[in-house]
Image (tube, rainbow, N blue to C red):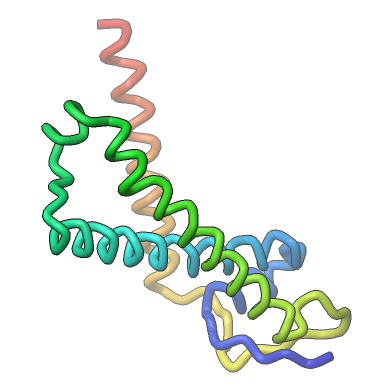
Length: 136
C-alpha cells in the first residue's frame, strides 16, 4: 500500500526509521491537541452566551458546576474527536503494510544544525546553572 504524507514531521520520522506505531501516535497527538483547544474555546463561548461565568472565582466557588459545565462537555467532545481521528487513520490505510512515500524531502539543513547546537547549548547551560545554584 502506497500512502503519501504531506507532513514534514512524518516524513522525517519515517526517514529516521521510527516505528509506525510511534509515528502514528505523534501524528494523532499533534492533530488532537489543537482540536481540543478549539473545542474548549467553543464551550467557553457557549457558556458565556448562556450566562454561565467560567472565571477563577466561579471555579473556586462552584467546582461541581464547573465540572458539569466544562469537563463533561470536554470529555464528550474529546471522545467524538478521537473517534473521528481513528476513523481517518483507518480510512487512509495507515495500518496496512507496505512502503510509505512522502511528498516532502526530509533532509537536515544548515538551520537545523544551528538549532540543534543552540538547543544543546541551552540545555547544557540550564543543567550547569542548576548544579551551580543548588550548591550555592
